[in-house]
Image 1: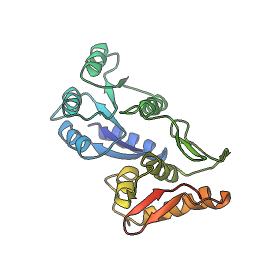
Image 2: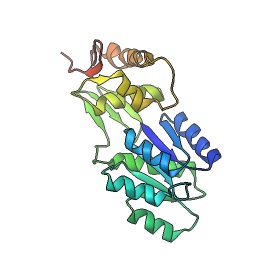
Image 3: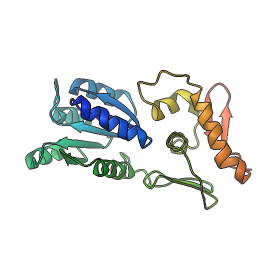
Length: 224
């Protein structure tokens, strides 16, 4: 899952990035409203964490501009402590939820999970393909009723494929969804994680779920 954090307090932004990446999210950072607005329109984020007090363009204006331009990505806005007027205006300008500073990281991640469950277009909580079921909210994976342990990145790659079932998903699309803008490594890293998923999801169950479309990427196929 890819998240945009727009926060000018660099220590807080980097702390959030570190924590979210440890939980399996791909995180991009922006430190002012103009940069945040540009990134939010360029990339397919699942959720945006947006501070109100930002240089160049405040969070209200960023949020309002995104909604005016048809960007429906869920937005969690960070407000001042006990700022009820901030909270009201955040919702009025199009935010989906708000969180007052200082906040608990546990609460923030719970809010993010709730927002992604609802999703910008009401996406279902659980993703299924045959007997393979992935629950992003509970961070669980099951095949034929049996739990399958996945690493954070394996989970994210599989989620990307499941959200595009019936389609061929290019490597660069997986990189864009699962890794962040700072990634400058070998794009073939995707192959490593797809191979790991095949070892865990297909081989033990006698299945062939993830097919390679040569020169393009991957798609999910029904087991024959």
